[in-house]
Amino acid sequence: MVIPAHADVIEHSGHRYHMIMGSDVKRDGMFLELLVDGRSAAPPLEMFYSDATGTFTLNTLQTASIPLEIVEHFIRQAQRCLPPAKQDASDVATPTI
View 1 (cartoon, rainbow, N blue to C red):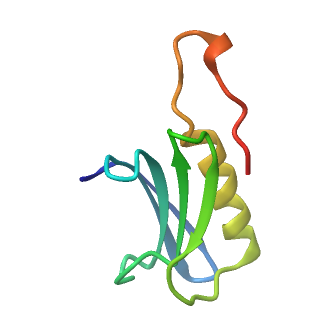
View 2 (spheres, rainbow, N blue to C red):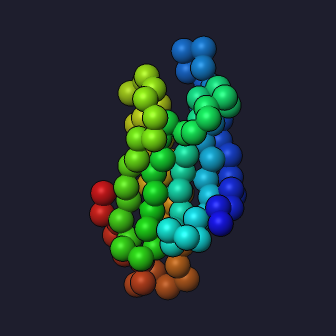
């Protein structure tokens, strides 16, 4: 089951890029998807954080021309938002990219 939790929108070069964060119970982790102009049948980019391994994976799900600034922003957002927060700071693993 996929549970969307947060949406972020930025504009660049006449396009609106939507970032949607959610939880994926089947894959045991969280994701951030990038949609272009809200009309993508599937997101061109997805960053997935695995709770099981503590690693990030960048998936390209369809062909799209995305400006480098948007890709860089997308990666920064994923690094900031996806790793789950822990109560005890000693339990926080450094994610591997």
